[in-house]
Image 1 (cartoon, helix red, strand yellow):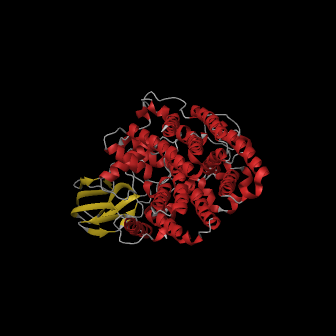
Image 2: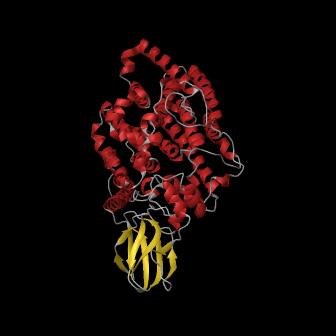
Image 3: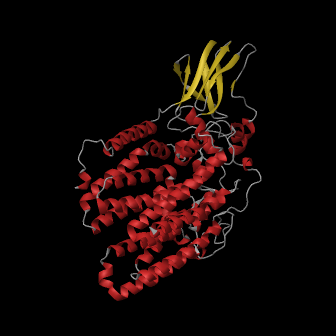
Length: 568
């Protein structure tokens, strides 16, 4: 009873230490302050019936852009639910922060308890939840999507290890949902971590002589891909249709953002940005407790190896330590300038933009190593003493989990107003504006002067009247003296379709603005445009996801009339 109380107490302290700054009634400035606008755009699209949500109506200076076709939607989908429940957009954003911290704390504890017992679980939970890099993501960069993806990493390993050890199918469901959540929270984290998790599955099965279980894991990984295919396939095959490729040049080129080894040990907490060289305005410190825990692990490992090397090297604990160590070293190395030749050869890595993003993976596996350090101490008294002291040092990291300052008015940056998103926020997030649109400066200058619809050559008796409009549909009633091009203030992107009096018409792309035009004959007509799922990538993605959802619901349903073959 006392152990449970102390465990709950320390977990609460870990959560509080990572979240106390969110209890302030205001909010704070971060590098990426577009989250509230994304939540609002997601909520508008969902209310309008757009599912899956792909098109943002107001970004792109009011021309719209396929934001959620490319930007992982899960955090903003949850945020939109909070917003529709009646919470303000700032409160909805805070709730996403709270959820990120809670899931990180709880998932790390569950994984640690499975591997190391209560003491190691608490150390792992504290080391991961209170890692300085998480504080950078939350309170400096505002990288909410990355923080959400990090929260699901422990659940992946927990699902893998628990299933191999117990053969209970529920852990495969945990694995499946966690893999999907990582992809739908931050696809770059998925690119870094999921291959490592698959390698861990294979090596662990070999070590346990249970390679016959491999096919079930292959099925789960494929099912996770299929569940998220509605997002993955369009994001992969349609990105060249946006301005995102232009973002990878200049400041955002990956070569400008490598780290140096000394930066892992420098406690130079700042709220600036990443820059070339070792003097970034942002900290990449691993943490006092993390470094102390690694020293403790090194000492304890050498001691155990010295005393009983043969037994230890054949143990399961040694396997875990070896894998976690190699994964940590690999992730740290890929963030360093010395790994540049690898980045030049492996082109897919260049989409990371910032090599130091590999600290996501390094932070997780280092936390696992620190949690394992207490497991190597056999004497209960020494183990509890070591665990308690290490926890205390890890709690010192709470000083990182605070903003530089609070805004006098949070609504100055965090709002849901459509006109402000169009006029103010669009310049902050231009990544996925369709490629045929003009330069951002020209687009911004012309956008404010344009109406929602217009004629290229309007005659005196021509009339255009808006009948209906939402985030992905518009309909006009027009009266024209002669055949004319009707312009919509909507950026063209594959998936938009046009109809005149219910008959499909070809969309003409305005060569100067990149917006949608429809050629309408003389007379009275109803002209409509709508965003649909007509591209091959989206059709295939949606179809795969629907099929995978049906398979998942059937396979993991308690009412399924199939034997639990996975348990045998």
